[in-house]
Amino acid sequence: MRVSKTIKDSQKMIRWRLRILMAEKKITNKELAQLSGIHPTSISKLKNADEIEQISGRVLNSLCNGLTKAYQAKGDNRIIMPGDLFDYTFDSDGDPITAGTSHPATQVINNNHLPSSTKTDNSSSEVIWLRPNLEAV
Image (cartoon, rainbow, N blue to C red; front, side, top):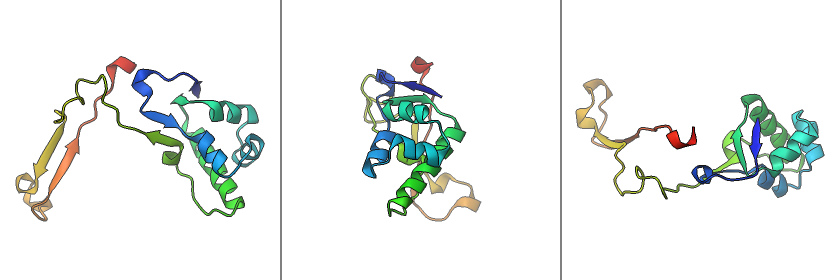
């Protein structure tokens, strides 16, 4: 697990929300550590991070389980999911691929061009191809 306090331009779009989720129900580091099985020092580091460069599935699972238990103990039956820990904001500044109004990696496929076994109506679907950000590597 790598935790960073600085935000790089290429990573401003994804924000870590553990601090917000804990504040919503006034969950302490010690309480979450007990419920998740993660060391209190690690909880503190994760809570104070602005971005997470990488996180293991085991830690993410433990955080979700611990937060769900803490929320339920405070009378909220919400189940915390991994997506709740992240906030995504689209920002095309500086990216020549997404700066224009038409995205070259986006295609609209009409059902008229699909094989007959998958044709259901005349609606269209949007397919977006994701390409890795080579600058971040």
